[in-house]
Length: 116
Image (cartoon, rainbow, N blue to C red; front, side, top):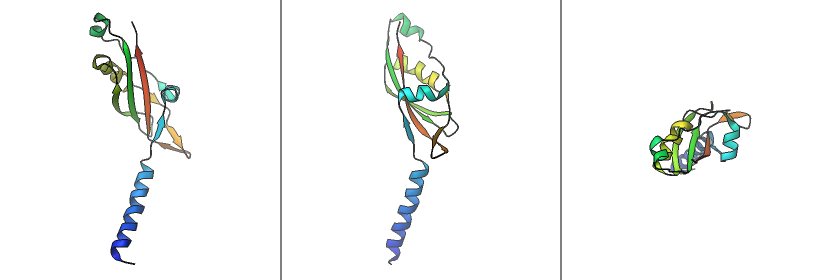
């Protein structure tokens, strides 16, 4: 077997292992809210209240193997409302997401509805 072929096979094997170890489970809004053990409700921003602004904010959170929120990204929503939603979601705590009996990283969709 050629050295270049052997290196290609080894690279694929290593990459495949790395991809599996970083595999993420995706949670829907309902699954995420069920898995959350600490849920901080976003504070309605004073400016948004004065402007009588309401709406939906959709976020995507990365949850580590211990159930902590690592990162939050805004998928959609008014920036004034989104900042309050992001601040709240960063304080959430989840039961660890399990796959094949082991805790894994997960991505969760979370939706907040701001209504006056």
